[in-house]
Amino acid sequence: MFNSMFEAFIAYFALLLGVGLYFYHKNKSQNDFNLGGRKLNFWITAISAQASDMSDWLFMGFPGAIYATGLIEVWTAVGLVFFMFLNWHFIAPRFRVATESASSATLASFLQARFGAQNNAIRVISGLLCLYFFIFYIAAGLAGLGRVFEQAFAINYYQGIVLGLAITLSYSILGGLLAVAWSNLIQGIFLMIAILLVPFYAIYQLGGIQTFLSILQQQSPQYLSAMPAHNGLIGILFASMAWGLGYFGQPHILINFMSLDDVANMRKAKYVGISWQILVLSAAILVGLVGKAFIHPALANCELVFISMVTTMFAPFLAGIILCAMLAATISTINTQSLVSAALITEDLYYPFVKNQVTVEQKLKFTRAAIFVIPLLALIAAFYNTDKIFNLVFYAWSGLGCSFGPLVILSLYTKFVTPQGAIAGLLTGGLTGIFWPISSTIPPLVIGFILNLSATFIVSKLTKKD
Image (cartoon, rainbow, N blue to C red; front, side):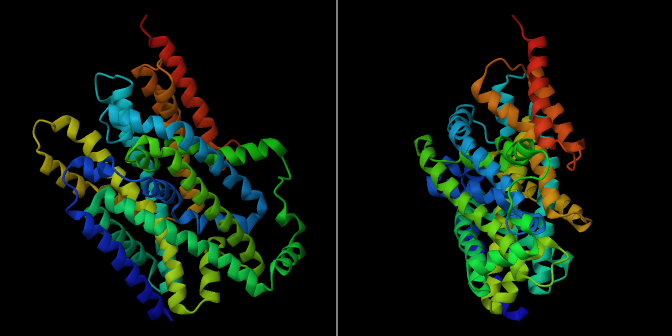
């Protein structure tokens, strides 16, 4: 059984490596490697932006939460779709134009240029905050890969983590953003098909929709209720905003906006991307619900619901192919974050201090080497991880969102922010993301977003020169 599943995995890895090799010689400059030369079409941009967002959270964290608590978790998906639409509509076009005008290859360099600081403080603080939260984000992805390999391919968890990282970095180092974006397009379509197939096939095996719903009703009448038992509308708003607000500050998503060939194509990318997101999130909800009715006895680890359904329903080779969709979701996020991390290290923490001493070729080689840094730190974190993937992703997502989201919005729509105000906002939002407990009644992203805006506004007013 495991041999057949592993054969499917080897075939999938060969495809990804081929993509990396193909684009290796197409990177002639740092801009090509970091941003694909800003020449990606709207299909690639749309699917890559959405696929780099989801990670193994789509197949493990979110369905696991639905499996454990029921339809009440649907408000997370509602918030994600709503705020991602706002991100595409109000942020993406302006961000694409503004970053090109500022000749910025990273979010940190853009904030530095936009807020006019004479030193590199904004750039360095932004870079360090981003790298810190990426350690936990990538660690969550690696932990997910380790669990997939362990459950599906009978590979030791720790060996699975190392293998997953090796696969991810191999084609990122070779092909840069062109390889990452094209592979994200392939993987995004593939994982959409897989996550739609599994719950509908399980419903068919259960005997149809009526039988499926009847089983859920018998298990718990409240399981299919989307209304919170406590806090009502406030609970719904917090559930939606706890994740959705984060979209404005995710560097691994924003980089895809920067890479689009023409800002006029952003509208097409928006509708393609949102359509994809609605489909995969709806399917993930179904995975959790159907898993509750399909799997007996109940799972001790709710986040294994998708894996359990696939290995139960399908022949080994086909199961291996479908489970590669989980790898696709995770790899698409890790490789984008690894690439963004390398660009941050090179562009914001290294090059500003040695710009007159290195050639273009040396800078590109340094970026390829820098791709290893944050993933290796994340590897250590994943080795010692005992938390749920859902919680790790939530921590990192919240931290990035409340660190950068307010400043991204203010950079595109206002002119009152001073360099001191921007630094105050970064530090306030970043520290809130680091230390605010994720189990708090008020989500860290909500409180961090508010505190960031407040600090930025107050300090900018105090330091504004007449």
